[in-house]
Length: 176
Image (cartoon, rainbow, N blue to C red; front, side):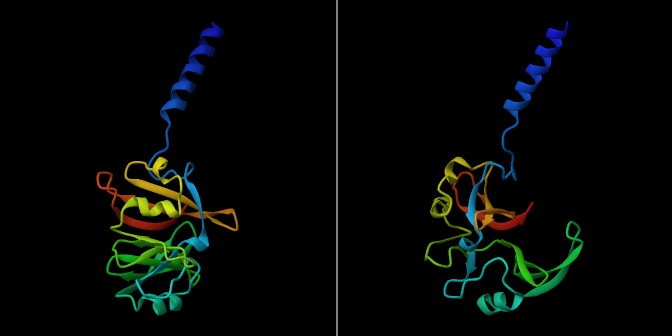
């Protein structure tokens, strides 16, 4: 009897383990990308990175169409949101914490190179930053953990793409 119970439990664990794949938004299987490799800019503007001030963002890409405050329950603080016609940059404690890019106006990449990708570009443009990207695609998404000096941060790069055309439709930085 004990053996049958043990076999049943072992079978359940095996079935559970094999059916629990990576799901949308699960970044445990993601590549890593250094925080300084994720700069944002317009075509001919100065690039800025996470940790930039609202003034630095305005200097680079101009005045937002709208700005407002948004309460972040997990941080128990208000964030300042700059809205550029649906593209949003969010600041916590006066530093760029996250963003959501929805148009091809904004380029993402390394501020030390000229390699950028953007909303509307083909997903293979990401390969310069995430060499294992093709094996990490899940349900129209691609993620990469963000590191600082090789150490994991609480942020990740989240790219949404059309699974048929592999065109990027949204690029964002999110927190766990």
